[in-house]
Amino acid sequence: MQIGDKVWIFDSNNRKYTDDKGNKTQSPWYRGHFIEKYIVGETKQSWIIGYKENAIEDISNLKVNKKTLTYKGKYGMDGVLYVSEEEIDCKCWVEDNHYIIQDQVMRCRDYDKLKKIQEILSDKEEN
Picture 1 (cartoon, rainbow, N blue to C red):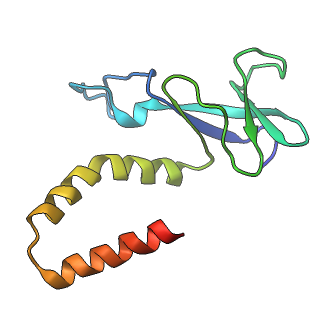
Picture 2 (picture 1 turned 90 degrees about the vertical axis):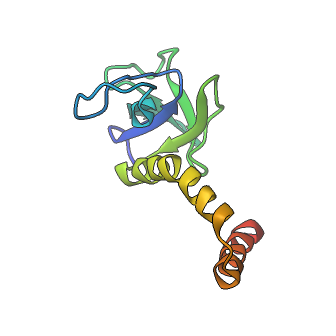
Picture 3 (picture 1 turned 45 degrees about the vertical axis):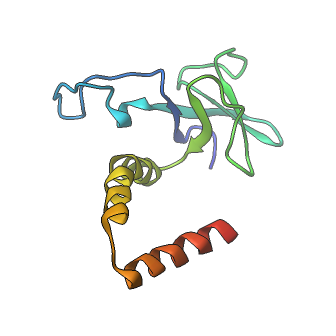
Protein backbone atom coordinates (compact mmCIF):
# COMPACT_ATOMS: atom_id res chain seq x y z
CA MET A 1 0.00 0.00 0.00
CA GLN A 2 1.11 3.55 -0.67
CA ILE A 3 -0.08 7.13 -0.61
CA GLY A 4 -2.83 7.66 -3.18
CA ASP A 5 -4.28 4.12 -2.93
CA LYS A 6 -8.05 3.78 -2.68
CA VAL A 7 -9.41 2.16 0.49
CA TRP A 8 -12.81 1.93 2.23
CA ILE A 9 -14.21 2.27 5.71
CA PHE A 10 -17.54 0.96 7.00
CA ASP A 11 -19.84 3.56 8.55
CA SER A 12 -23.35 2.48 9.49
CA ASN A 13 -24.31 6.16 9.77
CA ASN A 14 -23.84 6.49 6.00
CA ARG A 15 -27.27 5.44 4.78
CA LYS A 16 -28.26 5.03 1.15
CA TYR A 17 -31.76 3.96 0.21
CA THR A 18 -30.95 3.09 -3.39
CA ASP A 19 -28.70 0.27 -4.57
CA ASP A 20 -25.99 0.46 -7.23
CA LYS A 21 -28.61 -0.03 -9.97
CA GLY A 22 -30.75 2.87 -8.72
CA ASN A 23 -33.46 0.64 -7.21
CA LYS A 24 -35.09 2.07 -4.08
CA THR A 25 -34.73 -0.03 -0.93
CA GLN A 26 -36.89 -0.26 2.21
CA SER A 27 -33.93 -0.17 4.56
CA PRO A 28 -30.41 1.19 4.11
CA TRP A 29 -28.46 -0.62 1.40
CA TYR A 30 -25.68 -2.50 3.20
CA ARG A 31 -23.01 -1.90 0.58
CA GLY A 32 -23.83 1.81 0.78
CA HIS A 33 -22.30 1.91 4.27
CA PHE A 34 -18.83 1.56 2.74
CA ILE A 35 -17.21 4.93 2.10
CA GLU A 36 -14.43 5.36 -0.43
CA LYS A 37 -11.36 7.02 1.04
CA TYR A 38 -7.70 7.38 0.07
CA ILE A 39 -4.35 7.10 1.77
CA VAL A 40 -3.40 10.78 2.00
CA GLY A 41 -0.27 10.41 4.12
CA GLU A 42 1.67 8.22 6.50
CA THR A 43 3.67 8.14 9.68
CA LYS A 44 6.13 5.47 10.75
CA GLN A 45 3.34 3.29 12.18
CA SER A 46 0.14 4.59 10.57
CA TRP A 47 -1.58 5.35 7.32
CA ILE A 48 -3.50 8.64 7.22
CA ILE A 49 -6.88 7.98 5.57
CA GLY A 50 -9.18 10.68 4.23
CA TYR A 51 -10.96 12.00 1.18
CA LYS A 52 -8.77 12.45 -1.88
CA GLU A 53 -8.63 16.24 -1.54
CA ASN A 54 -7.88 16.19 2.23
CA ALA A 55 -4.65 17.61 3.57
CA ILE A 56 -2.71 15.40 5.98
CA GLU A 57 -3.64 17.71 8.89
CA ASP A 58 -7.40 17.54 8.19
CA ILE A 59 -9.31 16.82 11.38
CA SER A 60 -11.63 14.32 9.65
CA ASN A 61 -8.76 12.01 8.65
CA LEU A 62 -8.29 8.65 10.36
CA LYS A 63 -5.03 7.13 11.57
CA VAL A 64 -4.87 3.45 10.64
CA ASN A 65 -2.32 1.04 12.11
CA LYS A 66 -0.12 -0.22 9.25
CA LYS A 67 0.26 -3.72 10.72
CA THR A 68 -3.32 -4.47 11.74
CA LEU A 69 -5.16 -2.15 9.32
CA THR A 70 -7.42 -1.09 12.17
CA TYR A 71 -8.30 2.28 13.63
CA LYS A 72 -10.07 3.51 16.73
CA GLY A 73 -13.69 2.95 15.81
CA LYS A 74 -16.08 5.81 16.26
CA TYR A 75 -19.84 5.55 16.57
CA GLY A 76 -21.10 3.53 13.61
CA MET A 77 -17.64 2.58 12.34
CA ASP A 78 -16.26 -0.93 12.71
CA GLY A 79 -12.60 0.10 13.00
CA VAL A 80 -11.43 -1.98 10.02
CA LEU A 81 -9.78 -0.67 6.87
CA TYR A 82 -10.93 -2.44 3.69
CA VAL A 83 -8.29 -2.41 0.98
CA SER A 84 -10.08 -4.20 -1.88
CA GLU A 85 -13.48 -4.58 -3.47
CA GLU A 86 -13.18 -8.31 -2.79
CA GLU A 87 -13.10 -7.69 0.96
CA ILE A 88 -16.25 -5.60 0.68
CA ASP A 89 -17.93 -8.28 -1.46
CA CYS A 90 -17.12 -10.89 1.20
CA LYS A 91 -18.48 -8.72 4.02
CA CYS A 92 -21.66 -8.05 2.03
CA TRP A 93 -22.07 -11.75 1.20
CA VAL A 94 -21.84 -12.65 4.89
CA GLU A 95 -24.40 -9.96 5.76
CA ASP A 96 -26.80 -11.20 3.06
CA ASN A 97 -26.42 -14.91 3.80
CA HIS A 98 -25.65 -15.59 7.46
CA TYR A 99 -29.34 -15.63 8.47
CA ILE A 100 -30.19 -18.03 5.64
CA ILE A 101 -27.37 -20.37 6.64
CA GLN A 102 -28.39 -20.13 10.29
CA ASP A 103 -31.94 -21.18 9.39
CA GLN A 104 -30.64 -24.08 7.30
CA VAL A 105 -28.49 -25.29 10.19
CA MET A 106 -31.44 -25.00 12.60
CA ARG A 107 -33.57 -27.22 10.33
CA CYS A 108 -30.81 -29.71 9.54
CA ARG A 109 -31.16 -33.13 11.19
CA ASP A 110 -28.31 -34.83 9.33
CA TYR A 111 -25.59 -36.00 11.72
CA ASP A 112 -22.75 -35.96 9.17
CA LYS A 113 -23.53 -32.46 7.94
CA LEU A 114 -23.82 -31.07 11.46
CA LYS A 115 -20.56 -32.74 12.51
CA LYS A 116 -18.77 -31.14 9.52
CA ILE A 117 -20.20 -27.75 10.42
CA GLN A 118 -19.08 -28.22 14.02
CA GLU A 119 -15.57 -29.15 12.89
CA ILE A 120 -15.32 -26.14 10.62
CA LEU A 121 -16.51 -23.77 13.33
CA SER A 122 -14.28 -25.37 15.98
CA ASP A 123 -11.23 -24.95 13.73
CA LYS A 124 -12.01 -21.24 13.26
CA GLU A 125 -12.40 -20.66 17.02
CA GLU A 126 -9.06 -22.28 17.83
CA ASN A 127 -7.08 -20.06 15.41
